[in-house]
Length: 474
Ligand code: BG6
Image (tube, rainbow, N blue to C red):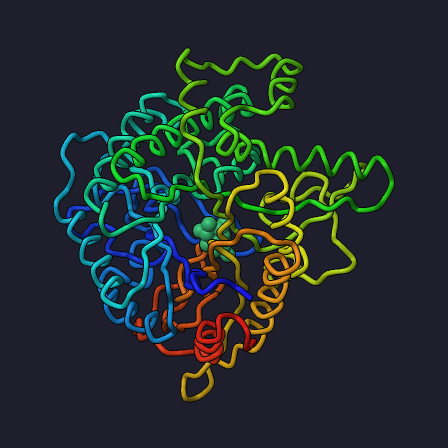
């Protein structure tokens, strides 16, 4: 049985739902200059906001204007928690100001009050691909150590302001995805840096992430001073990379590939870089600049728990000819003949979730929180506008079954489960609207047309029952 404190809920990120990109004194963020794409066609990063481009995140699903209605629906489903992020640019429009924007602070006060009114616990990511664009243009993004100061200042302001409203925090969303430095989108959204435009992309990526890791550790330390009851976690994209076969070469290749997935989590959780990182830097002649105090900061700022996203596994093969494209694969990825994939090429593997939870728990022995999991699919409403999303129910059900095994059979300390995109929102990787995850349908299409009306899909009632029975009635 799951504990009666288990945090069932849903997850989104500010930029994928809020819209209101220039309302309430908000500044331009890095996603405000990202156009839409599709599977196989990359989103473009434009030089500022251009007149003739469509930017899907500018309006998103207007959670900014609809949050009361949406929170009411979350409450009706029985959510115990709701994960979202604070848009940094609502609080500090440019990122380097001393004084915060009052209207931005008020918006999150209102949102958190609305959640708490229904007994829904806010779970807050401080940085979910939303850094101020100004920090990219003026300072070069997280490559610049100065960003630590700006981020810690922002974090302290919001943690102080919401210290009695928010207990659960996470620092950087999916910090480890940018290890895939050859794919521009990851480095850009995580850090405001396009690594493959740098002289040494990989070395630059390590330097950049080092700044984030130090900033994260400082925020953990400062947060605990503000409220010792805070639970402050990291957030890792957990994509287990299976060996394609029991050939020792594939086994070793998979282990080495997993090092890439773990590296930043190792620092967040253990407070020091793993031995394989130092060896790699030595071998490649990389010099990652660290200040003398950094080692102590990292040690003192280890996280309280690990937030993770889980969508898929990949299989890797030592002599693979097919290389992953960065979005649905990793270097050396090959299709796994035992599992199917979504329309966007993400391999569907519920057992992989139990496997992932075991990997992380055995490695770190810290509480885990599944803060993202879900099925991006095309929904087709019937004539009454109703979506019978049995495929989504099937996906989530099978994952919950495996999640429960991880708790009940493997003894994993699991805090909660918040499926991704509980209300339809803008896809991060493609900028599409048609890649939907929600229990709540939003009437809007890829070109931005639609009424923005909300309606319940079949999965809405299903998930409500799951929560009511604490995961017993699936
Ligand atoms: C995670 C991100 O990578 O996956 C979310 O944290 C994102 O922001 C989610 O939306 C699903 O990806 P996509 O591209 O299907 O929206």
